[in-house]
Structures are given as structure tokens and as C-alpha cells.
Image (cartoon, protein in one colour):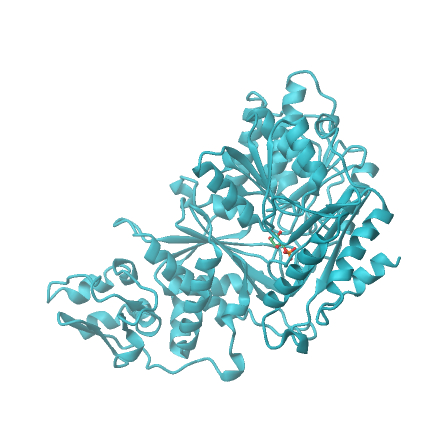
Length: 619
Ligand SMILES: O=P(O)(O)OC[C@H]1O[C@H](O)[C@H](O)[C@@H](O)[C@@H]1O
């Protein structure tokens, strides 16, 4: 038996060093076929892995070369003895890598006070933990192993992290399918596509991205066919990754490299994803091959992953894309930050549209889950305007439906959705996952909702599996242009601009981000969250005694108050020790009055950095 096992030890090494599993779930081997059963295919997948639990046998606690199978059998393996490969200087605080439902960290050295914490071994451990999580959630079919797709954006650390992710996945006995440069939504899509030629559907998917953050960062988003993983799952995975990491040995790292070398396959999945987008526009236009013939559309990918949209989506549909810019992936982002909320980015695409006299401009963030547009007059269609436009399109198809948005949307948007479009505006919390989950929840309790969208440019439609896909949002706009042309009412992007006519916009709209100094004595050793909550409570109390201010009757996040013809919202950032303050008002004077009301309440909180607010009210 020993000889038989030792020949297939890659995954057994992983077992012996990283895994925990339930005694009850061990397979019943006939006494003399044990070894063959185990190394015939992929041992991990036949066994139910379990998350840490005291009742489980932890292989680490067993003799180094022996895995105990209860009283039925013992398997011996010539794996390396346990000897941690991680020195104390490489300790990683895994939980600090959690960013809501994503993982984010520093992957490139060289920025002062930003030490690398998303190292290759940490990445390998996280990927292995995800693979284990997946193995527990999904029962692999007899006929095939589980498979995970891996894609990345244009960041300079993409390649090394892709390799590390591949090692982690392969070490767990799961198949690795690399897509190379890809968009986040395409990765989710790969869990839904049914096409064995492209090894789809995959059981899980990992996108390596840190969205619009600076070049030295990177991170991961995880998907299964039910959508992106939530916060609780990410926390479990990180805790488990920390265990795996502690137990790495030189030998196990070498074995996972060998496993990855043997297991990795590459697929051009973006070809499938883009042809689906092309097909969607053709269908909406009445099955016309080139419904965008003659339209001039400019794409600005900001050197992220979105450059494909010009050549692989717009051009096959007949559009002219001359003047498109920054389509080449470049992880140093030399032109502007790929972020439709960024002023410089919006200026860049606006200028390109005007200079080229284009019909429409389209801009994506780095990993293409967010987008915005610019009409032929250079008018930006982002933030509240993008939500208004998408609401108009969705409400044409689904009259009366509920539009779920984040909390920093304007009062003008509510009036537009409810009075002009006849829909219902449900202003919920910040965070793309929060708005998507809320829309799904509403549907589950009988309230119809077809759109969940944030001012950040994340938008998800029910018809598109609640996937927040910046490219799909733009496809909806293109559908409108194409169908207007097909019906003879073509007037270029005016078709779109007309749809948001009547959206009232505040003359002044500002966002100030007030930092909480986490090391300040005023925190008295408590968390920045508790401190932030105390600030918010105090603000709520002080504003309730001001007759000129009215607390929003329904509000799900922070303190939202109307007054002086406008409103303000102070809330805790989803991720950072920051209290973002949004103010919208009909004039600067009114905005300052609202700012002063906030300042009066928050100035006594010594750990809060209020200089930006101070400057704003004393401008
Ligand atoms: O709370 P904040 O710091 O403003 O960040 C909020 C934003 O965080 C991330 O970028 C998420 O992807 C967005 O969905 C969310 O809106």
C-alpha cells in the first residue's frame, strides 16, 4: 500500500499538511483497494473536506507520514515532514486583506509605508482555501473534477499572482483554467456558460483585480454560479487560508508548483463572452448583423482590461471606433485612473468624444464591472445620470418596477424615477453587493425589481443574472441606439439624452472624506467603527433639534438630513476609517449651511480629521 500511495502524493501532501475532514465522511474502502481508490483520480474530491471544527481529525496532529482512516485503514504517504516554510518576517494578517466581499492588498513593493502583504505564498494559501471551500459546497460529478477559471486585469502583479492562484487551486486537486486578461463580469459568466469546448461551466471563478486602486495593489473577487461570494464566506476563506499558510513547507510548495504545471489549461473565454454581448445587441435590434453601422463610438479603457470592447464588441456590430484611447493594458495606468467616478478620467473621454465628433463615449474601470458614458455634446452620463438613464430603459421594459440604488443618490433622482418614470426608488446602502442582494431580496418577497445600481457605476440587471457588468450596461445603451435607428427615429446619442430630460440636478454636489485617526487617544482603544458610530449618533441628536433640518424618514445607512433646499449624508465608509460626507444643494451658500450643521456636531471629535470640511465652509 505504501508504494502505491507514494506515486501520487501531490494531493496527499496537501491533505497531510492543509486539510481537515470529517471522520464520518471518509469513503468506505474495501480493505485491500484503499490505495488504488485514493490515487486513481483526485482524492480530495472524493472526500468531504470540512472547515475547522474540534470534532474533526486534523491531519497536522497525526504522525507526519500517516493519515488515520479511523479503524478501517491507515494510509502512509512519503510526504515531507511538517516544517513551516514561512519565516516570522513573512507573517501575514489574513483578515486585514478583507475588503467587504473582496480581498485586497499590496502586491508590489516600493511605495513608502505600504509593505507588501499580498505575497505569492499568501495568495497560494487563499486560492487553496477557496478551492477547499468550493469542494465543500459542490459535489463534483463522478465524471469530472471541479474546475476553477482564473482571469486578471492589467496590473503589473497579475502574472505572478495568477501563477500563485493556480498553484493553490491545483494543490487541492481542482482543475485550473486560465483566461489571461479578462473582465470581472466575464469571470462570473464563465460559471454560467454551457460550452464544453471552452471547458464551461466552471464551478468557481477568481478574478485578480483591485479595481481602480493604485498600481501597487491587487486582490481577488470570487464567484460561483450563484454570484459573487459574500463577506461571511470571504472571512471563512481568509481564516482558513491563514491555517494553510502556517503549514506550508518547502516540500509542499514545490509539490503545488508541480501540480499546477501539470493541471493548468488555457482558454480564450473572452471570445465567448464578447460574442454573447454582440449577439445581445443584434437580437435587440431585430437580428440585424451590423445594427451600429455608421455610429461613431469611442472607448476609453484607461489601460485596464476593457480595451476588448472596441474591437470585439463595437466593430463587429458595425460601429466606428476611431479615436478610442488607452485600450492597451498597462498596469502603471499612465494616462488616468480607470474609474468613471474620477474627474480626470471623465475629462479624458469627454475631450476624445468632442475632438472626434463622436456619437458616444464609453469609459470603463480597470476590471470592467463599472462604466459610464458621454453623449455627443460632451455631457457626462455617470453617477445619478447613469442611474436615471438605466432606470428609464428598464422602466420602459418593466413599468412600475423598483430601482434599488446606493445611499448617496440625489433627491432629484428619486423625483425623476417616481414622478417622471412611474417607478419606485428604493435608496438602500452603499456597496454593489448590498444593492444587488437587496434587489434579489425584494423579488423574493414579491416586490418586483429589475435593476440594482450604484452611483459608482456598478449596475446589475435581473435579466443578466444580477451580474454587475459595466459592459452589459453599455450594451443596454447601444441596444437603445440600434433599435432607435431600426425604427427610423435615429438621432444619435440624443435618443439617450432625451431619456433623462427632467432629471433635476443640484447646482452644488460635493463629497468630503473625513478620516478617523485610528491611533488617536480619543478612540480610547476602541475601534474606528465604534468611534464613527458615536460621531453619527451625536450628529443625529444635534440635527434633530434644528428646526431647519429634517431627518430622512427612511434611511438605511448613516445620517441623511434635508434642509436649505438640499441634503447631506454622513456615513461610515464600507472599508476605510473614513466618514464620507455628501452634500447637495441649490447654491454654494446653502451647501455651506449644511456643512456648518455637520461641522458643529463633529468638531468635538478630536480623532476626526475635519480640515476638508472646515475649508469647505470657510471658502
Ligand atoms: O464606502 P466607500 O469608502 O465610499 O466605498 C464604497 C465603495 O466601495 C467599493 O469600491 C465597492 O466596490 C463599491 O461598490 C462601493 O460603493
